[in-house]
Image (tube, rainbow, N blue to C red; front, side, top):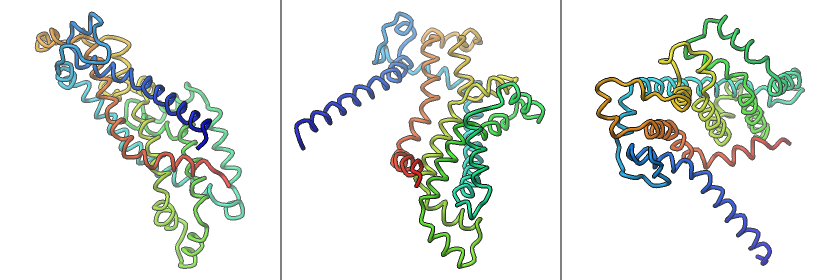
Length: 293
């Protein structure tokens, strides 16, 4: 390796390492804040290491029914929403991955989906549609409207390009054995598409977990808020003013800042745990799904 190449590689590694540290520092600060005492957080003594380490904030947060309820709503949304989203994406991507001679309407439908990626009807028509279909204040209001979002269309494009890259001989041999399109899709194509499925699953999980605005406009009652919407409300306005007599003793060790930090970190933790398991498929799925022959 030449000297210039070594310098270039060293610079890249140094730059990416510093960039990674900058991305991690806010999360480390939130974690340190959540484990610090009320007095240390209030006086601004906490930086990247807990001061007067205590678990009081986590005990306080996990005892709150509203936090646990919103966590349950989000888990339900992720499980149901991701499952239905993947089924929908596969069923749309499979026919769109065919050649025009095999599916004549492919080009028209593909441009239709691309158009919805670039333009939308706006928030008011979407809200009126959700309201008129009776979905307000239900879990389905958090699931069905996401099907037509630009991120979902991007996932369809990613998956159909991956399907198009698979050998055509597999499908032809299956058809010679009498298999139909449904069997070919679910028993041959899908099992071979693990990298792009893992990538799309990761995108869909993160989108459903982090989405907060739809919960704010579609849910009339706070107990139906997903976790991201609930966290948004506590960041914007303090929730520690609404306490009962049993919480007064806890408030000596828990402040508004430490409680918010604990809730934010607990809300982030599941996504941090999912990434390592899907990371080995992520790059492969992105590269293969984004290349069009």
